[in-house]
Image (tube, rainbow, N blue to C red; front, side, top):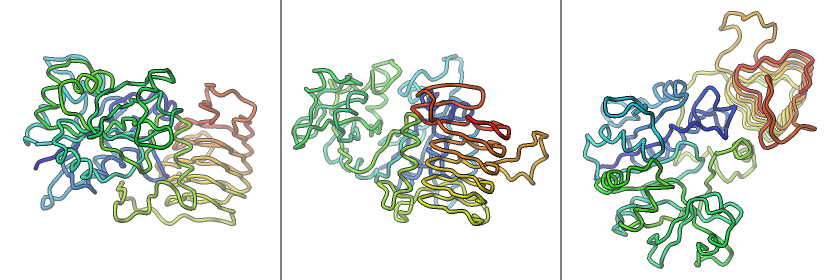
Length: 412
């Protein structure tokens, strides 16, 4: 049986601004050394799906570079991770208008191998799944379409696509983001003792002929809003219930929380599972150096130099630098793409990384940020959402955008 994986990586990622100002959402760094797109690609590879296509559109240069530098299959084992970028053609002069539109307009490229099944994945979620379990459910239930679903509580359900299933697991109703309304009560899953709802994870398995048919019959742009609700009436659509950890990285708050949760002693999601590893670009960086700095509850990536007073409850990215006397707490430090001595001085007078005697709390410091000495960065005393030249605040988290220079003595 021939199976291809499609990863949707083209969304603008507006809710993750300013992290997506210069990159696409799947290219956003996660857990210090990875990128979000590494999660679905690794799930595909670990599940035996080695022909993978990544559909891209917005701010895709760094994403393309990462894929090209990372996923190089040899000629003997076969397989590929191939980029399908949005393009203008004589038949269509507009860009992708949604998830279904992206697949519809890219279909001619991945149909060449005559696949039997197509697995469609999102590029901005954190989870570990054996996709073959979903495929097995799809085959055994004789489904046309299988949707991976996650049991969620009421406070989450209203903002997700919610399913109603019968005793055989077939989906009989679907509502996209119903809100906390009386309609939501009709979708309560009856086989849980507490109040649970089955939410779509945005992971689909299609028979190839069915995928072609639904996209030809319905020219609307989005799977969740348009294609799936209509398909339920005309095809056998079943649910595969996924009970393990899954997080949709859709907002700054969820991104910050999901990263810092990785520092727990026994995190819900672990990058230490060598039976199903998460792959990323191979780098040849030295071990991190800690110079009399108290480091606790941290994920520490390669190539860092920490000379501060304290770094606590943080995710520290590649080549991150923290100067003497500095305190960093409850923060994500994404690090840098290079070391200063490898580059021509830019004349700013502020070196890469966090300078001396700084305080950084509840923050996300994006890549290649230059923070001078005696700087204070904290969301305390500020609003939930703000935008300035030097920082943004989203959901109470202060974010310093990529390549920002913060002069010494600045208090944010």
